[in-house]
Image (cartoon, rainbow over all chains, first blue to last red):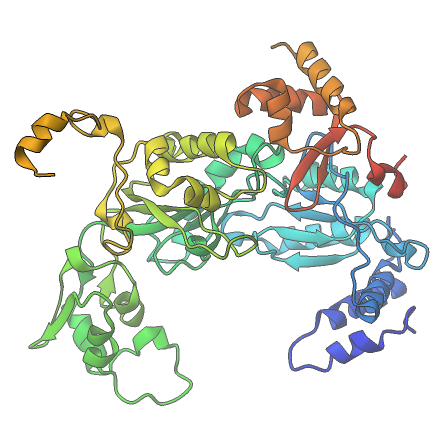
Length: 438
Length: 78
């Protein structure tokens, strides 16, 4: 028997999709039965009270959670998000119901043992409810009381070799695609750099001194499986400089129907025989490919690595061998001023451990600029917009490059500084009048 | 600037602010008159010494003198 009547939540369960309400109810029931005799360290009925407070929020059309709070583990300014209920008498099980962010392993590789251990820990010291994964990529532990925070942190650190993630005005937990572990398109070892930068920038991750959040994300190739270009303040997207490698025999294999295109996906209906002209050549956004007399050719300087041809014919086309990444700055979701995609700041850079060039010429100068010039709650992308891309080039020392321009002459104004112009801005008017009438 | 001087400056300045108990990192750096990287070291030490404490909404972090503000009372934390 449920502790609280929840007619509005029950209705949510009737939709076509799996429901989080069902999940919470299942956990509430499992805690009530406690078949494994767990010594619950927070109220056993917290999940019932969570359903209760949510039902009340729907009824009132307003939230019953307060805004933020003073919680954390000692010395850390992130990783814990204080959640306090404003109806603690009615729902004592969720009077304190703090979120903990746990740094996910690079590439989100787990062993079953590890998953069991973190779930056991959270069942005992928290609500048992998790969110795998939050948008930042972290493992999210949903709901515990203040006294349990240090306990959970101690067990994570000492028994599971696991750290908390980033929240607040910190570097957020860096996140990456599965990379070279499983994917032959990955142009660099995403997991290695993600892990390296996470360790290198521990102070930035745990002690907030940025104007606002800051995210690194690593995509091994331009397919951008973690969507770094759309949401990371610094997005690292794998690319290559030389030619796409073509296996002409395999191209014929696709043309003759020996291999299913797209690695066999989209196979839910019959699309007819594979048509290389229609499905690959005509869809190339730069028109840099041709297929004539049974031979496929690609004009590499024109290609901008959209990945379409490689995705369609993975057996015939492979990424080049001179690999590295492009770096994009300033992407963000639309909290203020609309969503922004990342702007290209480094067209190509080698990604090689210990990544000093990336740290010293890209990350740190950008941080220094943003920390000094950024307004409170201003993302890097907003600062770039306010002070201009030119300023970003100045602080990083990168030379302007045509590849940084989306399209020519969108903006007709070029701002020269006086010291960039021979002779400065002063001129001899008499000399000028010799050549130009009034 | 040494640590004691920095702490003194921050505590005096924050106590003077009426009706406001939570401050952005930038506000503190301005009080210290130091660049962010230098200010961060001093401010971190104040957290460690429990002069200051963090407040976080989840997306933004603020700093306050330990134990001040409505929140501490309202959250039954005292």
